[in-house]
Structure formats: C-alpha cells, structure tokens
Length: 354
Image 1: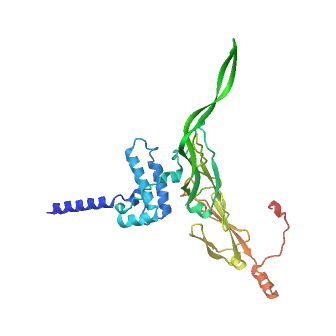
Image 2 (image 1 turned 135 degrees about the horizontal axis):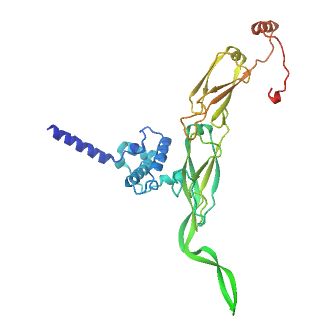
Image 3 (image 1 turned 60 degrees about the vertical axis):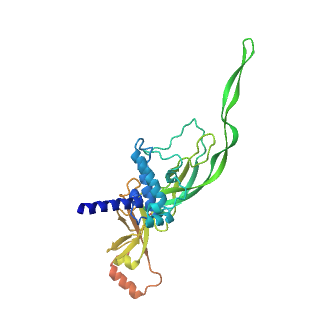
C-alpha cells in the first residue's frame, strides 16, 4: 500500500513538471525576485560559457545554450514573465517572433573567446567601423549597469536582377604582329544577385561593467556599416565617465572634499558620506582638523575591473569654513587664552610647495 502511494506521488510530481515546463529561473541561476539587470548579467555570463563555438561537438552545451535563450526571452519581457510566473512555460502564448538575444549582447557574428580581438580576413571587402562615445555616470561605473541602445542600420536584402560584383583588374596580352605584343589592364567582374539596403531597427545591450575606465572599448561585431560584397564593420563604443558633483576618480581611487565648521575643526566631529551605491562611509575625527587635512579610507574607492572584489581607496580632503563678521575684544582674549599660541607669521613660496 505504501509503495503504491509513493508511486502515485512520483507520477503526480512528474506530471506537474511536464505541465510546468522548464524552470527558467534555475536555468539562468537567478531567484524569482531577480531584477532585469540581474537577468541580463546572468544570461550574458552563461551564454559565453555555453556558446556552441566554444563547445563544438557538445550537444549538451548546445541544448543548454538554447535553454538560456528561451529563459532570457521570457524573463526579460515583463508581460511574458508575468504569464510564466502564473502559468509556467505551458501558459506562454507563442507570438511566433523569437529574437536572437546573443547578438543583442555581442553582435551578428557571435563572440570571439579567449580575450582576443575580432580578426578580419583582409581579402574580404569590409564596411567601415562606427565609433561612438558613450557617456556613463560614475555610479554606473561603480555598480555596473546595462544600457539599451536602439540601432538603426542598413541591412542588405536580396532583390530582383543581378549586379556586377567581386570586380578586379586582370592583365591581358594582345598580339600586334610578329614578335610584337601589348599588355593592358581590364576590369573583370562576377555576376551576383542584386542587393538593396533596408534600414532595420535592432536593440543592443551594452553592459557597463564595474571598474571600466575612460576610453575603454566595447564592440558589437558586424554592427557597423555594411558592405554588400563582403562583411559589415564593427560598432565600437568608448566609455566616457561623466563629471560627478561629489567624487573625482583617479585610477581606482576616489577623491572628495568636505567643508566643516571652525568648531568641528577644533573639537572634532562625526559624519557619514553617501557613497556611489548609497552605502554610508563613516568618518570620525576626535582631533584638530586643519584646512587641507586628508584622510584615507581603504577599500572605499572604485572596484578593480579585473577583480571587483578589490577596490581602491577613498581620499577625503577637509576644508574649514571660518565664521564671518566681527569678534568682540572679550572673545578675542578668550581665544588667545584658549589657544595659547605665539603670533609668528611665516612667509614662504607657496607656488613651489614649501
């Protein structure tokens, strides 16, 4: 009897699995509360790992790659994700339009693994590369973000008729008479199907990775200008950090200035600085702070691009705001007694740093 019950439970569980379909959250390795950026980041990382070009002859990796595409297509779309959360994969309506998420992240000709630049065949005609400066905030360079880019570009489509293509110069020899020859150049072309260029819209996903630096290149392969007799050029973005009102970046370190009152400078103070991701950097001074004094907070700078677990330092320079107005003679005497210093002005060449 117990065996029969266990068997029925097992059959019920299998039936539920079949009805529910694939677990897209598990496929991408994210929780059901994952944000859209977390889903994009998970897909991008796993798609590189399981891409067929990197796993040739591995049907399991190929199937995993297809599952990743299906999972991303659903979970990155707000409406589809709601349907999936309520009814599972079987409850999704097939709209018939299945885009290629991988090309949205890397371009039309896939990803070139091993950290090498995309190599081109010099014998194949190629369209121009398109170069674009992309301004991003310091917050994005600290935490990371995805920038959605709508790209309109001319795409070659086969048209009716034929055209000349693959034209080249060939030498021809013509006999003019006994022992006399003439050599001349002639253009020789092949016949190819006619092509027309049609503007098409494509959404590209550019990942601003934590720790990226000014001028860093991010390429989408074959998303540049087309060449109807060869391959398209690349679309190359160059990261440009926007000016920030509170922080200045130098390498992996951050610099900021804090203005304090004369009272705080003399007796000490305690404060919090809101960092780029919203966390608080606590600052305590229990001794005199002079104008230009600087303190260093380790591991509070920018994340290293190669290893986000490491961070630079945050340098905080203090300015002292002196009170304006007149001080009574009585208070002047009190200050003199309190500070107990001898008036001894010093003249020096400040431009040379002495």
